[in-house]
Image (cartoon, rainbow, N blue to C red; front, side):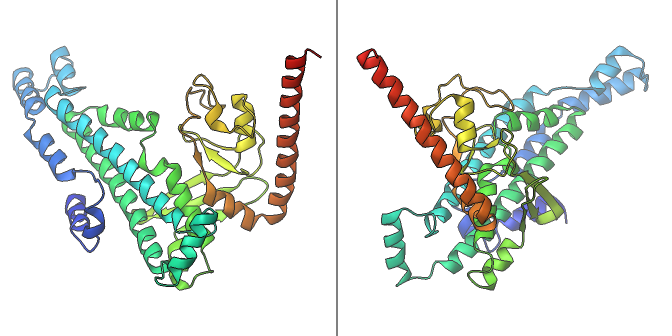
Amino acid sequence: MKFGDTFMEYLHGEQEWFLHKCSHIEYKRLKKVLKSCRTCKVLHDDSYRTNQGDEENPAFSQICQCQSCPLCDQMFFSELLKEATDIVGCFRSRVRHLQHLDPYVASGIQRCVLGLRQCFKNDQQSMVQEGRMLIEYITMNAIAIHKILKKYDKVHSSVNGKNFKSKLRAEHIELLQSPWLMELGAFCLNFNGSDGEEFSQLSGRFSCDFNVAQSVMTLMLPNSIKKEYDLTCAICLEIVFNPYALSCGHLFCKSCACSAASVLILDGLKAAGPDSKCPICREAGVYAKSVHMVELHRLVRTRCKKYWEERQAVERAKALKQNKEFWDAQTKSMIGY
């Protein structure tokens, strides 16, 4: 079965009620845009008839290596960019919703509300179901983007589709690189074995290996897609502690990221200036929309208890020291002593 048929079957299958509330790639419509564009094909055929396959002719070479098509580009890439952006936003909001149902992550008031809710409704089954659907949702749309861009390059004999994938990556819209996918993986692993067989089946798509050499979370997706996420902080070179993902996608310990942004740990990453840059990619303004990876933090706490306790003591002492030095400096500046 062709992917187009598979994707349409997915959209109108048993998960249609869920997908109705979410954005998705309009694969069929984008494919029609490509079919409606005859400019490149006509030019190619005319040139071939005129030059009789003379590949050394400059005109033939130029048309064969067509780099853009105004008719397609205006509709195709702007539409695809909008859809990819909407999918990222929908996926983020749905994973957040799952987090709010996790009593270990919820705040004090939320925990009380969840406790009362459990008396009347069991959320476990719905959490498992939504987790599965979110994994398939992000995967199917990622494959749809890959397929349609590959088709674009084939139709136009170009690399514009490949370049557009790089643009999605640069603008942090690449679906399978979302920090929220990593959070969903940590969420599934946190429930593994603790809430019955259903959660075990869900977390079976994810695995996590914490070791001295390299800590990695592995995600096995449909269509044999395998993604690996490095859980080592690039600054301290240890397993991320109280991790934050910057908007560029890079993952750091909170204290390490605060140090790189020259802000106090107690103030947090939101206090970083717009000119503060990521220590890895050097992109500016990536701290304001950083994501606190609460499920990943809980996973590290559960799987590496001794390490977590040692880092907790170190980070607490570091924060207290920073706070004391700050107020000492403020006192000296006020009284001039």
